[in-house]
Length: 595
Image (cartoon, rainbow, N blue to C red; front, top):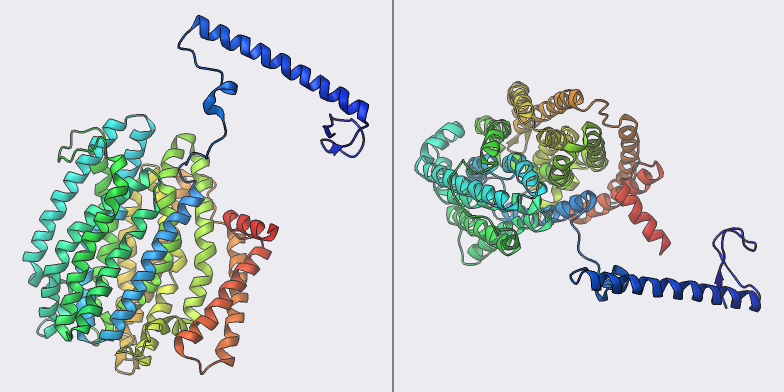
């Protein structure tokens, strides 16, 4: 017979199980049974009395048949889990994106067709970014979430329908204009292509890619709805279908003997089909949230005018980012042939950690910051500091890795096709230059989300335009001198543009931090934590140099894996010892050790 001790009974500590003698145990058991019986009888009498006096009164919870334990109800994702869901979705889509780039590098290398593809894809991407995910999330999600939190679900649905209608109308008109004005756009964006075959190829590609962009803008609306309801993974994994469609198109066309311009046009058709698949994939998950959604173009629906009012400055801010990309393309078209192409190979690798650890955290935190706004500046500040700390934990070692191990990273493109070793060296130099601004770009996403959650969409826009001016000035000053440095037939002028982008990123982060500190007093980005992350990253980098020195003759991809894996493991271990691991990662460590 076992009995539970009361405080102070017997020896051995409060609340532990003990084995008293038989008589004592029997007395305790009888007493507890008697008390339980009296309580049970009293509760049954109260229940009967309640039912007789009020036939509609519910059965007390203790005796309700539904009170039996059952499977746990699914709750919305917590912010750390939400960020993990976003990161997981982005990771899957980026893996497919890198596979697309590997296929692209294998078939096209760094020739004129690559310059044409990068330029053609950049122009409609500007439209997608201006009307799509980042802009729409910052202007629409805070308003939509607030209506839901206030219990105004029908009004929230009508607002979502109006935003959908307005987006479809604007995106459709702009896509049609883009198809019609393609020749003039090429002259404006890539004047260095005038008079050669690249310009004609870009025009042909644009007439397929602009309709794709209109579909992807609608996909961004679906993302906004799902994020507002804390359903993150689906919308961020959907772009994997876009990448997969292009892979299938290129591989299939190459197998049928397509070459050159025909093959690049097949890739554009795959991009258009992939955009449709990306939207269709999200629709089944959206249906449960579309009860009150009726598409319209009315601005009189509750909340729509606020969305439009917020949209304008966010559009301006995103316009600054995209204007910067167009300026880079314009300048790169004036450099030696291949400059646009090698920038295009470095940029996805640069954007991968920004998306995984900057965008994912910012996207997951924006709805929560919007909800926390009513709780006061302190709550928003603490959430912002945690988010920035998480972003820096991941981006600091990646920055150092991209700089030191740039050629090992670029080895993923070397699959024995048209992408040569000299192409990897030149693209690696551009990647290292971009990496200098990686921590600033990632944390700026979080800081901008904090501004949006506080209802301030104008400050990030003003700062973004200052970033453009500085980036362009530094890039122009460096690009032509560096273009004289050759790696094979490729100049390094694109690396000068990447350095300009990094300088602009640090300026933007500094200004955002200073201005946000005025609205969130006491805001700190964790100086001592950053120092410990840098120390862990340096230790990991030292470990990564060993396989480079001892195993120089390995296949490029095998050598990259032999370098990157020890670096990652060492960083996580040292960072844990220094106490800078995010809380969710520490919980995983503890759970693993208990097993």
